Length: 238
Image (cartoon, rainbow, N blue to C red; front, side, top):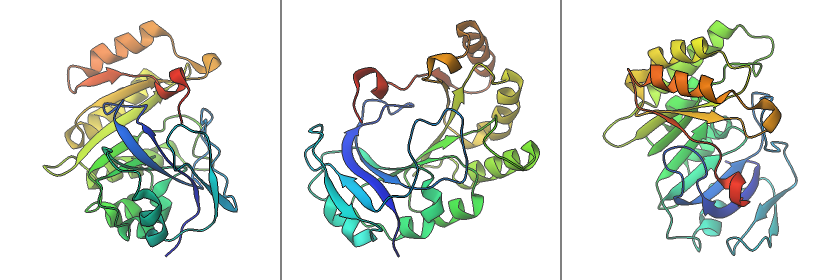
């Protein structure tokens, strides 16, 4: 089993309730969506960038695709971390690869939560789930209702348990309808520990501050709700 990996590096989590925790990052290429606010190059490449010395900006280039044993060998020197973040792109495209990972660390899945069949494959492997809810123009040729149904099902499958935390992250733009957020929040609130409203980093896409605060206030009646921007962009780390 192999997968196209674009980057392997050590940094800190910049989003959500685990912000500031030191993590290893394994970034998968490829995504099944096309988010207007995406700030990551998800294209597949011939080489994986590997930063052995954290923060150095010095990379080795490894030929893609990689197998789980190669990944385990590469991350082994980079310990003293909270977890291994599986990010992308969309990691669930490579669910079979994830089930074969043996790195001796908790796995922290960052997913767009639109692939419930793949979520079912990894639910016993992951300890943390950072699940997105996509509400705008990311699903071309598909009705919003079916997209949201698959998202809710993925949250149900990867729901919080005694052994797994699952939270929801919603990127908020100026075009995000608060009513859509409230509707989906009501459907997943029993599956998650909290909701994170993440204002879009791009200035031209940022939502109104008052809108964010009013939405948070309304959500707090049902579920713990945080407003957290992308902090790693503030100080320029990977």
